[in-house]
Amino acid sequence: MLWTIIFFIGLALFCASLGFLLHAMLERNHRRLLFVILTLVSYGVVLYSGVQAIDEYKIRHAIKERATIKALKELTPPSGKNTSNITNPPQ
Image 1 (cartoon, rainbow, N blue to C red):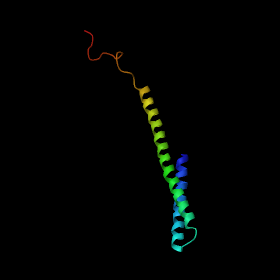
Image 2 (cartoon, one colour):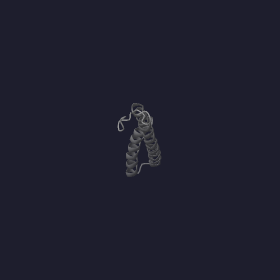
Image 3 (cartoon, rainbow, N blue to C red):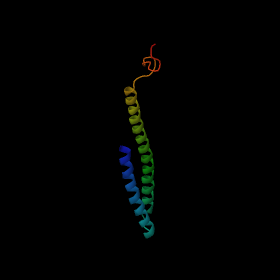
Image 4 (cartoon, rainbow, N blue to C red):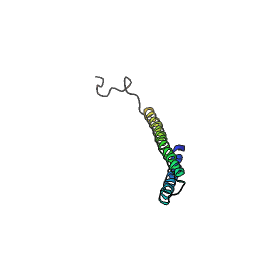
């Protein structure tokens, strides 16, 4: 959940810095290098936090699936030697 929040904050920062970078390029502003660095750093944060958020989701999903499988195994009776012999009644 934490990486998802960091992803959206990084995405907002990336969009804002990209807009400021475009404006600085068109206006021939002297702060272009600052906006290039800010855009690259925020892009890195978006990529890394996105990958971490996906991994975190997969882990949570696997834990939930494992708990479901365990609960289903507890509900089903074990099959084998102790089953009643319905197909061959005693004669």
